[in-house]
Image 1 (cartoon, rainbow, N blue to C red):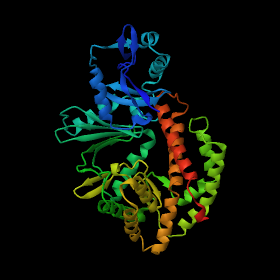
Image 2 (spheres, one colour):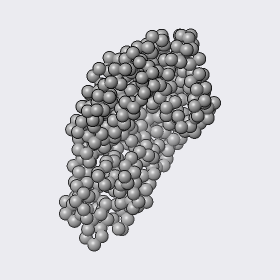
Image 3 (cartoon, rainbow, N blue to C red):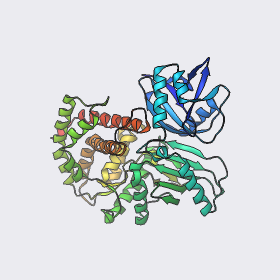
Image 4 (cartoon, helix red, strand yellow):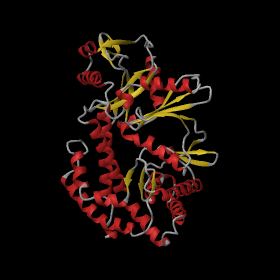
Amino acid sequence: MDFNLLLVLPDINNKRILARNANGIFYLPTYTESVAENVAFGDARAYNDFFQAITGIPVYRRYTFNTPNDVVFVFEQIDNAQPKAEFDWVLYDDFIAACNADEIAEIANNVRLHYNQSKAMPWIEYGFLPYFTWLRAVCDKNHIQITGDITQLKNAYVSTVFRIPTNMGDIYMKIPGKFFITELLFTQGLKKLQIADLPHWIDYDIEMNVILMKDMGGHDLPNESGAETLREVILHFAKIQKDSIPHMPPDFFHYDNTVDTMLGRLDAFPEKAFEILSGTKYELTQNELKRLQSQVLTTVSMLKSINAVPIPNTIHHGDVRPGNIRVIGGNHMFYDWAWGAVSHPFIDIVSFLHIIRRTLDEPAQETLIDAYLQQWQNYDTYDQLRHAFSTLSTLKDLFFALTDYDWCEAIHLQAGSVCAMSADGWLVDKRNYYVANVIRRFIETPLSTYE
């Protein structure tokens, strides 16, 4: 299904809304071509520039939500710039009274009620001003001069990132979501262990959950990297995993994604997943619940067979993908440790191979797996290692489902009851979609050969 794209900008005090006036009827700025529902995922710069080109007002993108017919982007002004002549600032009540459609009036009213309100995304709850105030103070303390326009590079539910040109080169300010306090604390812990290259921080604030870092240099790992490059990446990550073993479990905050913990959660998981999705458009049917329960029962012996191979738990990244791997002078830096945990080492690589699966044929993937498993041959025979890796590959969707459920539950706990036309409403909807999708994929996975 295609959707209309509506663009919403409240004024700085959230008293008025930007509208196009056509013969006394108010319209929101609108993209004239239809868009896909998940258009919200993408480069913030493109959306911000697009809005400014239409209206003449420079903005940061705040959040997105969907209605039955529309995708709605809500923006925040950078300053008090005046819009182009065809646009007016209109009081909310006047806009709603002279609106061209009931659904648009409902959207405007919900933006008025929920703008600058989020329990999970602090840059929406507080606006960007506190972070730029902090940024200026840090720059003054470090004798850093801002030399150009600040650009928003990323605006997603996990974090927002800004690039700041300065006299010492570009620097970056990152504000993670509230449930990603782990990223700041976990990365701090990794820095103490000195087992991996990490971004250089100029400053940070734990209470605000904001990080200011230097330009890392280099470039992100290309999505279409070849087999030899990916082999180097995997072997580098294997070294980090093995170097972390003497420090397990770490004495800093981390998630527990071990196989033992997974086994302890299985009995309650189907019913919990069913409950958290109930009443949403992604809810599981009773038949799907029964199939999930049956699949989960089958996995118990499989997970125990993995534990029979004496591979120690290691540092777990949780989101190893090309966009979280920086290539710097031929070396690889793994960053964005938002889901930093302790887990079975093979899980990160199983997930990575799943993400890059479309870029490599099966023989190339097999070569990568072989190279990785050779790094662990001092723990068991190659055949046993291969069995454990294959079993984890078969169960990857269950691991994904448990992680997505944790994320979904954390948002529900953080945000509480939410309005669908709000930032947190959009966030909950997207996570519900992901947890339901991966559960449905898992219950279609053939497990009979492992019984």
